[in-house]
Length: 178
Image (tube, rainbow, N blue to C red; front, side, top):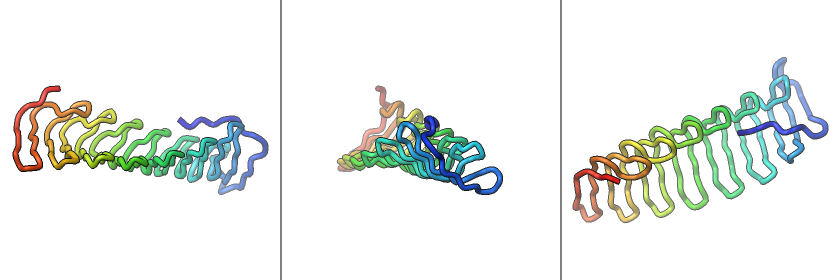
């Protein structure tokens, strides 16, 4: 969660109407925020927040928290572009890692949630329901070798009734228990 560290030195401010202003703030810990702020000087509106380690968030804020559309870029090359609520990924978003893995879909409380598509670096791909960050519910997993499994998933593992279709066209229909 974004916390507002102590301000260091002067803060550059330009009024934007009676309730907001444009600010450029450098914090004691090295964080820097440039953008819109509420009358009390907290990030509120559109802005850029850069952390000392090089991570950066560009997007909307509400009362000093990431809220609305925004992009968070980690120094390792990982990015999340999408909706935020209370500084957590919430709503629809796209999460991409440098290893080639990618998730496009719903989020709730910083976890993959609802409908989504997860593509793994080896070419494996899951499309379906997520809960608590894992495939949970109905979905289809396509393995890198071309096999597919369609059916129920629990905590990322095939569970319950399902159909496994092999790349050569053979298939197995039955129950999975893990």
